[in-house]
Structure formats: C-alpha cells, structure tokens
Amino acid sequence: MTNEQIQHFLEAQYSGESPVKISFKTRPNLEGLFIKASDFNYLKSKNLWRIVVGAKIQMYSESKDESLARIFNGTEITRLSV
Image (cartoon, rainbow, N blue to C red; front, side, top):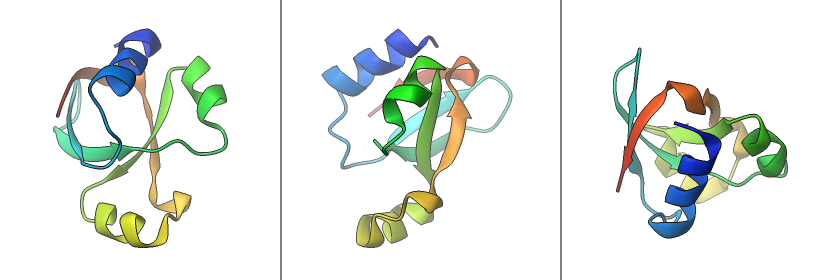
C-alpha cells in the first residue's frame, strides 16, 4: 500500500484505540496498533509505520512506551481492516 492509502485509512476508519488486522505480502497477518510517535511525519513520508503488535498491545496501553513498537514498511502491507 502507498503511504496515502494507509494515511487515508488512519484518518477515515481508525480511531487508534483498538487493534486493526494487518495483512502482508510475505509474512503472516497480525493485529496491531498504529502509534503516532514524535517521528510520525518523517516515517510517514518514507512509507514506514510504527506499529505495536500482539501481546505488547496491553503493555503499550498501560505504559505508552514507544519502544514496544516495531517499524513496518508500508509497501509490504496489502490490506488493513478494523
């Protein structure tokens, strides 16, 4: 997906509070939270996205620790759904 497609999804359908299902070209699907860290605009311009995945979502919701997130390339994402 392009960064415009992902940004449109984040603005139109995603509240940022519940995980979304993320489908990839070359890896298994996962659930994750897109987070807006201090480098959000820079990463977005490169089509890179900071996402908290799986069991770390609960820890992130309690601590808001950005180090729990991983950075994913948007070109590997094929589909996003709430």
